[in-house]
Amino acid sequence: MSLTQHHGGWVITLSFLLALALSIVPLPGLMEMLRPEWVTLVLIYWCMALPNRVSVGIGWLLGLVLDVLRDTLIGQYALALALVAFLTLHLHQRIRVFPLWQQALSIFVLTMLQNLIVLWIKGLTGHSPDFWSILPSAFTTMLVWPLIYLLLRQVRRAYHVV
Image 1 (tube, rainbow, N blue to C red):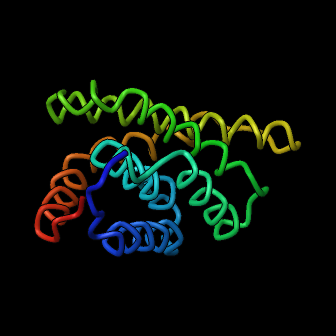
Image 2: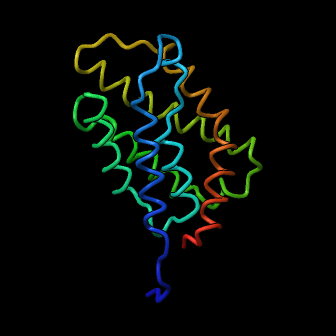
């Protein structure tokens, strides 16, 4: 049993709220396809940094909120983000020791997995899946990872989030 007190829960919550807001900001045509998966990035960071505080349940709840915000079938993002959180928690000790460029490749794989689950569920519901539409988003998510990682690490240290 851990007797350490947790600090900075509001920082984690605020980062998730900001990521949710960034994920629904309207963008013009092509920019919409290039939008990074902000919620996925923040979820992966907190799962790696604080695996004892951010769990699969948080991923599931964030996914449900994202389902509502994006007006999609309830549960598709919840399932995808829960799986991403599970894999991140399972592999966090390995991913944390990678250099940033290798972490970014891992983020690309996790984002592609999330997008493929969403695409699969869309296909099951009768929408025609377009595989090529998910590649730009996963690629920009991979490119943004080092910036998000460094920014959130700085915030975590500045506000002593444990």
